[in-house]
Length: 115
Length: 112
Image 1 (cartoon, rainbow over the protein chains, first blue to last red):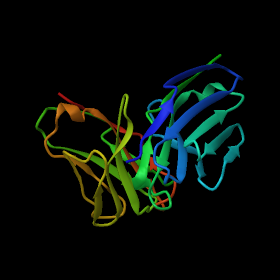
Image 2: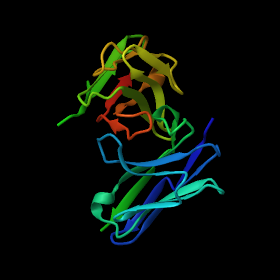
Image 3: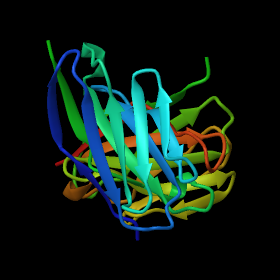
Image 4: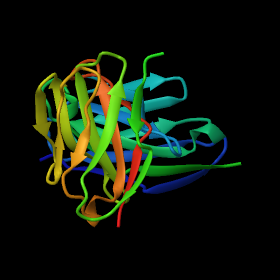
């Protein structure tokens, strides 16, 4: 089955700097790559996703890039703010059309924004 | 506002007892999922359902069961709780099979 590796497990950056979280996946058939943010004591929430026909997607300070040849995708957060502190999960899906039953999650990255 | 709620939020039980975690959503989503979250493992799929009377096993389904008698609810049952099932459990729903997952706030289960 699919295997998703996520790095780093913990990332500490100064407020205002950029943060990058990287994920690799094993199954070349994967075609849907969402990112979820989990704040303390809450459930994960989708922040951005990308499908295999697109190389990059941006939403304000957040962007995701996908390299299908290398089988890796990354989350980029610019101008980090205290409210960006959270655990971030990447995921990849091998389900047809990206079905949630086929989602495999990475182990998560704890992002800490230092004031 | 539509929402997804889990109960109880915290539970302590003993090995061998039956435990049921409730999940209720008011979005009228057909698709519902149960995940467990453990340090070092991320989120792992336990069971999922694509509609009333439909249930499917996920990656870590041993020792768990679900039933779907209506659109709104997908209760998760641990038939005989084991210490290895100590975890935080998340229920989620989605409008479409390919769509965004909406998660509940989690149920922390401790099995002593």
